[in-house]
Length: 352
Image (tube, rainbow, N blue to C red; front, side, top):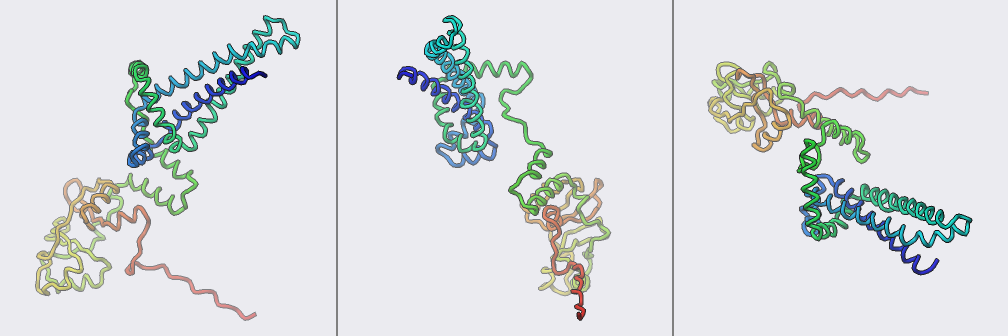
């Protein structure tokens, strides 16, 4: 095999590998999750540049397709035209006629180049890009950005054509991908090997809590310990002393007339003859149809630890506390007032 043949073979491999770089770049950018793109953007510099490329799929997909097509064309056309004449004489030596040897050499080289293009130009780079999408994107994203800038007129024409055809079929040319459904997220949590049982349980509870309303998690009004607003501090001290709560709704004429709430700390330095209604703090009222997670977020933001849950007529359904909502996510939180399950004594040893 002479130097020219080796050079031609090397050029064919180079074209195949260039096509593989473009193919791997495409998969790396397409595989980036929104969170990864945000992280790259916050990193700045090269990462921000890659994020900008990933957020413009029309541009980078057109540039990738140009690169893959041109590389594939040159590898096939150049390889067939330069290497076939070198292979044909060897086939003639095996007894094939000259015309048949030329045709068979062309077919064999086309199949060989197609094989190399599939393995080295598609499958291998795409698999590597899938496994290391962020790293590959940071490595080859900026060169692709420069290539897209260089091919701007062609990229623009391809993007316009693609958008027109996508609209023709009822699609949105500016949409990147559909949002992940709750079922898909649940499946990912269930299958993720890096999550422990406790972490997985918390995530499952978060999904379940998203579908629950306050009516499902509140403490019903029949189970709520309230303090009459017309009572004095002295009169309610005994109620507070025997109750395991730190916050109590303050009511007027009935349970639907909630005036506020009282924290046990408010009673420590209060005048024993003061009315409870004068010490009451402002309390929030929430519809029973509100969802757990948005309510938890709002109560944390407003630093509210207790709220009244009301029905569609404005009547009191019950109360909900910040602790109740947190327990929906991480399970029961026992404190010193919660009854503990009795522990069985160890079995007595029998003399042997």
